[in-house]
Image (cartoon, rainbow, N blue to C red; front, side, top):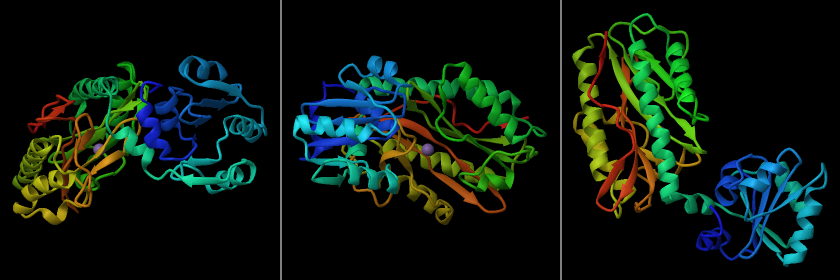
Length: 356
Ligand SMILES: [Mn+2]
């Protein structure tokens, strides 16, 4: 992001004189600086980036549209106050969802401002619609996941531990150029697969298990997110029915996603498939979420969402059924919303794979 998007800055400011940007993802989005630690002060006609000496070089090269100011320990607020004075900024907005209470108290005491107003979800809303460059980074991230999963798949068999699969997948993604994982990799098998966000441990895969793998990586700052569920050997008819129902719901959700559609209607379309198979009470979460610099962004594809989808939003479509004691299935793709549908960024098969 840079000076090419003044309308995004105006949305962010919403009538205030400046925005105090402190979170790693918003620093990166609005300035380009990827170091994570620093403070940006952004107004309609000024751009300052305050960093300590560890980040000065990086900030100067990554945020060319910003005046980079190096501060010494204890000197940050004085440096900010100098710039506030020279540009006459009095009312600042700040990231209330990201700042600690003690940081807020310190800024309230030390900054010479008339008001610090919460920014609410304005930064998140600005980031909702992606540029082509952002989409290409996420397409690449998702592709890395596709390839890494393909290379890990031969490991899946009875007797191997969940933690070994998670480690292999993460290693493969790093070797393919990922900067890291976009969240802690989920590999859950057997009865544990009924925990949507369970953690991989030393449990071994067993014959007849469902194994859910939910994972993603970060490429040039942008996250990917995908989920596939596999069978270890032959599975029961009920597990097969759960799989088929989730797949059908996922495909229905995908076909509902398009620009102009209500996010809540996409959730509804997929949920109805699961409800009509009498599994409704086992699908507790929403259909999907936005993805970007953060793994969970706006919009939410949930029954309560009031968002109308717009072209180039990136969202996931990930229905699931989780039955305590038995197991669960989730299938997830990340997609770019388009005028007449959606562009699915992952290409890994969704046909049930039975691992022998
Ligand atoms: Mn997800």
